[in-house]
Structure formats: C-alpha cells, structure tokens
Length: 162
Image 1 (cartoon, rainbow, N blue to C red):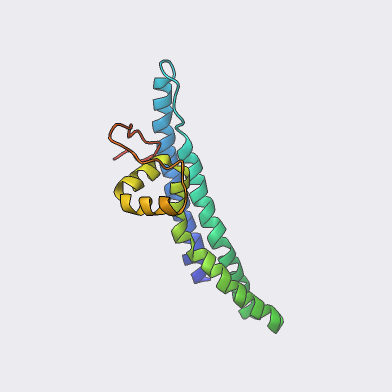
Image 2 (cartoon, rainbow, N blue to C red):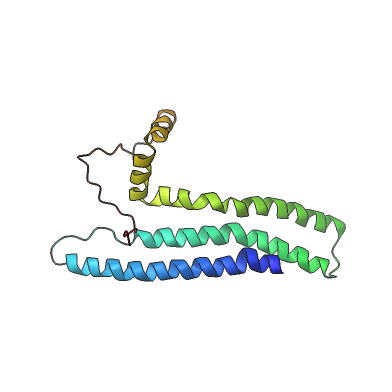
C-alpha cells in the first residue's frame, strides 16, 4: 500500500496542486490581458494553456491509474483473498504491461507540449535546428515552418519569465 501511495496518490496530489495553482495564476494573468485588449484589438487565444494543463493531468491519470489499480488488486490478493492461479498470473502480466504504460508518462509531457503549443514547437526548433531538419526530410511536417528573423516571435506559450 505504501508503493501505491508513493507512486500514485502523493504524485497525483502534487501534480494536481501545482497545475491548479498555475492555472489560477494564468487565468488571472490572461483574464487581465483579455480585458485590457477587449476594447482595442481582437484578443488572441489565451486559454490554450488550460487545454495543455488538462492534457498533462489526464495523461498522468491515464498512465498511472491502470498500474496502481492492478497493483492494488495484487496486494489485496496477497492479503488472503483467494484467487485462482491463472488469475494471479494474468494480473502479474497485466502489471508488467501497465508498468510500461506508467513509465511512458515520463515521455508524454514534451509530446503534449509539442502537439498543443506552437510557441513550444518554435522554441524547440530554434534550440535544435539540426534535429528538425532531419525529421522534416523523413516526414513532411507542413505546420512546422522554419522561423526566420523577420517572423514574429510572439508565443502562445504560458511561460511568463518570472
């Protein structure tokens, strides 16, 4: 049960707390920005960060919840609940598969940011230009244009530099 607490309950509480605090800050920040721009200019999409935060928290739950569910059932079965040998073997195999899914969560956050945040893609491209040119030659990616110095570097990212 300690493993379940340390691998799911505590990390989920920390992730949820941190992203909720960040969402509250960004809601206030972008809310003021939208109110200030409302009378003069059409506001740009300032709430894409909410979609990103939701996807990061959802990916955490999607990847760690199956592992911890199977692990909980195995712990309960070891406490004396009588289950068949084949069921226990299937649970142990499921634990291996769900563990791989759980640890794949470490790779999901950069992918979520890359898919949902154009500013992140632009900055990643600027920091690793050789990698993206090799990828572009293998797979056509029309939406990932090469930024030039004449292009605006305005970002849809939620990073404020504070």
